[in-house]
Length: 541
Image (cartoon, rainbow, N blue to C red; front, side, top):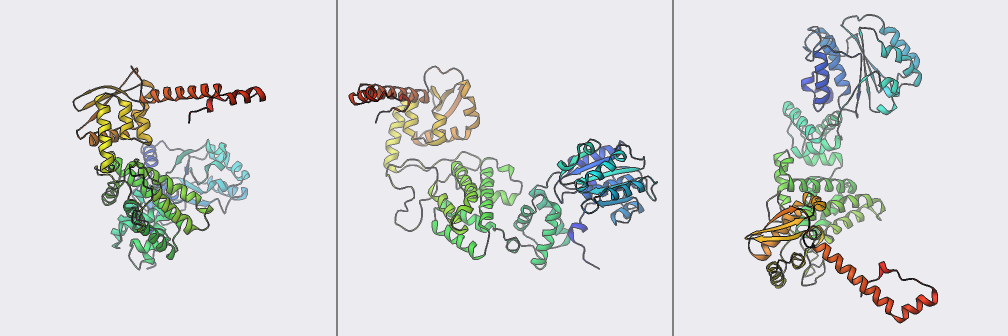
């Protein structure tokens, strides 16, 4: 027997086996079961998502000998004939090659005759947007008032090119792209049924390469089976696709967590020797970083258990700010790759940038951000997190001497109920400092510190709860006792650190302006050259 490709062998033959288009199946099933049958349907969507497949199932539902329903029997002569492309009353026309007005006129002339073997004549016109303007005009009248025995099914990948006069006469359904997870599940089901050994990682690569098309995924699966001599393993699939394997990506994450520049360069050299795409590598790295960040905050969003376990292991090694910054560096590095002297240089510089730029707390030692200590070629390790996945990350503690000074300063400010000095003593930076600056100290009772935000600043709390939880952790660690932050919103009774800083800034600027205005040299310049003093740029040195 001749081999039948998987895309044809596993083409769904009923609505129950159709994957990923539940919204379309629901609407069509209800219409068929209630006998509310429109005369023209338009299916839109990218290639390989099921437009022709739905058309054939719909033709069977209309012509099944058991009656019109959403569940054709699949066993009668009409169902078998449609499945095998030999049913005389079901016609598939490719508008890309048969697009003229004469072709459309000939089709419509045949349509007036009664069905030969079925209940309805069903005309399926694929890539209907390729028809000429005259062909569209020729079909308009028939499309609006077709004979009782005639049904039109139109399909297109580009609905914007279809005249609105045609769109208004059809029921339109937009077919979705297949999510990678659904594609992976379906490929695994097929390989299990075909008794072909496979690795889940290989299927994930195929699913991403298919870009939402189930037909493309099955074609790639056929190619992978041939490439792997009857097996579908990750290494073989990545070689076939020219894609970057997960081993390379996780090696990069391991090197970043350890601050090991040597390993990063080794990974880059290995990728170059295998002629892998550095652009695809940065895209895959950004995707992986996004998945790790997702696992860090919403672990249950990762459906596959094995992938979730691997991502959670990485999520424990990085804090949230590091992941966000690394993601930005990866996507910008991909955009800048064409500007680099060559792709290898651009890729390695992007990896080194991941080591050089990362959120850090100020250090009392004053060492360089990228110093490796003994000159071993290793950058200082990235900040790590010790909390469980899904909880806010914390930066590493300062050196012992600095920690003592920080604890004393924070304790003194805490006893005075001076929130501004607490924020300063904690040496908060970045988003954590900005959020804390807008809070007002209300009271402290036992292990609970009550802070107030103005109603206008409510969004700061809603959008940055993880950051406030990190501040809570820093207070607990620094003071050596548990501290819980409770928030309320309302009118600010006193002044927040941000307001106090603004007052200080204005006072300093006023002093600077006064000093300039009283300076004899400045007064002489103003008088001699009719100059003016720009007060907004004045500042004390």
